[in-house]
Image (cartoon, rainbow, N blue to C red):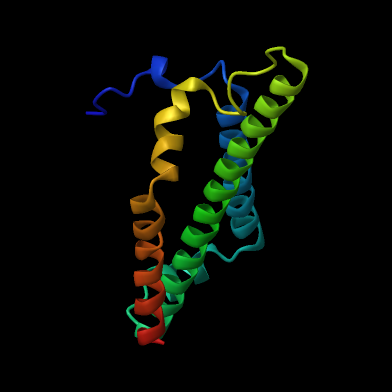
Length: 141
């Protein structure tokens, strides 16, 4: 059912993805807990999540697009920081003639991902899904 996804595929030995995943899970659980604790869940379910009102659907599309753009900017920032950290470490290595680090914060396992992030195709195609949702949300509101 999950293809090659097994317990061995989860990078328990790498702190960056594990810390990031934990933070995301804590934030999601915290927001859901707050919504349930305040008693907003029935209202959200009736009036927003299952709504057929085109204006509310447009607002939800717009919020989804903004979340997708935020995620894309975060990915871009992490990638650029990693590239610049690796370049800075290589400059230091050249100046003092010793070997400090191989790569940036990401492991060699993530090199394929970083290579895709640097490609021009990725930079032009990635904004399209959020842009389509922003357009759709704008036209519905």
